[in-house]
Image (tube, rainbow, N blue to C red; front, side, top):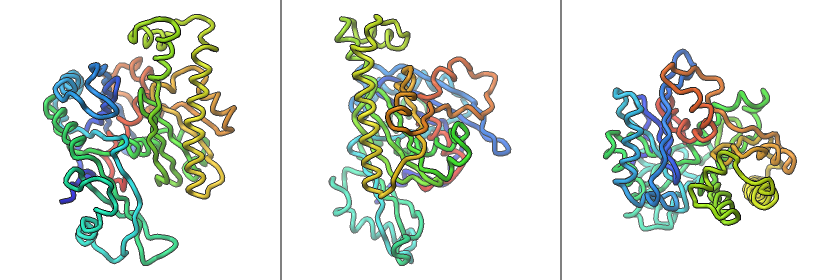
Length: 359
């Protein structure tokens, strides 16, 4: 039975990004086409509760989510979360254009054994019709997504334990794509027609989503993140992990750290971004990426955007999804500004409240 992870009609939901180092939550409302930030919450994740984007301790994650729950209006019951990592699969397949959704579901279930490299009893599948295939009008492009049922159920259980009801479980890279619309005003006026790469660098995972004309063309998850920067600080300066993390955030480091720690990490980050973009260009036949939007905690490292501009020659900005939004008086603006680039995935999940997306 194909599970409907991507429900069509959803009530107002809080978007919750369950990360390796923290949980981020965003609640948005919409009035006359204008979004408003109603609530934002960020809580540190319990050590050991997450590993490789998988929940290891449902109770511990639930306890962190309970702290988030207290910062979200009680009237909001529903939440949208997301999965990512090596066990999440997303691919475009081609099916007969005349098939109904029910017929597509039956056909995909029959063919799933050849499409998914995992036992079918261990995964949840969903699909969405996209558009008619340009090369063969008798076929329709269909987005097929699959994730380990265990991963989905762990997030649902953690949300349930905290007083939320999981309404949607999405895929992180597509939530990032959805949040792209919130950042277009940071780019030149033609950005909506150009190829835009969204790069979200978290603690342990880097998400790459490439879009053009509002459509997601390519996604990729890479095991790379700010943790490597923190561990370099830890190693060079004989600090504990927490001390290294704090020193990174506060820039409380010796003058020579620029050469010993920052420059090598910047080189690794540049290689990761360049490799991801090159893989897209090779597979798509495109010549270039026009704009790059950088998000995640690592985007806050001073000079990262300038480095990418200088080395890649791509117009790069650090994401602020709330730049054109109204903000409720109850929201801490300092916290919002401090964490804005880290809240892209949570914002993309919060947008599930307002529109029916094919991703």
